[in-house]
Length: 395
Picture 1 (cartoon, rainbow, N blue to C red):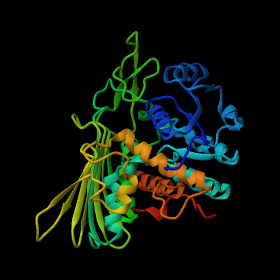
Picture 2: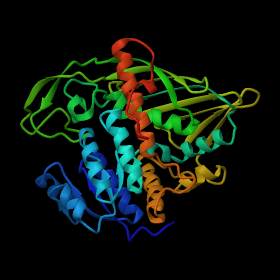
Picture 3: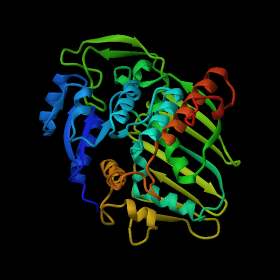
Picture 4: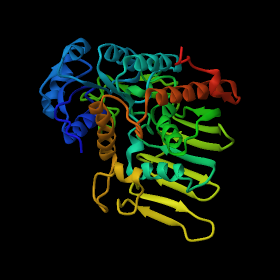
């Protein structure tokens, strides 16, 4: 593996995902120079808690640090656009959490800036880097499933299933007009697009908000915190919610394939259940994030298979993403390690290399156009083509 100890990184965001980024970078050997919190005080406190040497006071300090080569953006969605533009214009590489922006007009501009910068610009679709998703990508590329006909699945969670559950993502001004689709649905859209090589041509969507009013804590709440919906004093205020708790989306793909998917953050008992099922003319395959070391492979004329992650049995794409021996489950945190390992190898090489499988800003822009089409479809009750929305990243 490439030696990354000479590369320095900074992480914007000190919550759940920001901490995951920091931990994966340390495991990789990257030097985490510091973190930037939502305030100087919170940043300093969190830096001390996780043992990071420095808490930056603001973004300008991050960009002025010559020891920082790569900046990770894990801030709320509304901040991505401005922060990423500044990072790229300062001549640093960037890894941005999804969704890339608040709208496809913003994401198109981010694509243009990234291309002009010549820097590595990746979107954090870490789920691509569960080894068996890379395995499935290699299988489709090799023609083992045949022509893809039908793609189905879902991404369901329960962490916002009660009216006392709270997170900044609930607010359209911070997370975007779409919540379950933008926050977790984009993972499913990106993953299935990556595996199959197919892009959505048009969508038909319905959105649902089952909890129109929620109790907002008077004070900060960390994502997936066990104290969601509470503060030390138990003080809350009632807030009206306009973002989607769940969504149902039908998809028409270029080339004739069809798809259907759902998202939900209110399905009780489903903690982090992303499932995809791809039906081809020769065979099918399916994967569930809650049992990530097993890949279903379906056949018509012989017994179905379950491939347990084992580098002695996997294709080259799957092997390249695997970090642990067979029988040692690779989970959520490992997917970030595998993802960062791939991106930082390209940073060390000076740019994206042939065969790279991490999500680009062009991929992030596609997901934003998908989201904007979903919004229009839900509002107008019709099929919406993706080429009806968004800016032009080539202009």
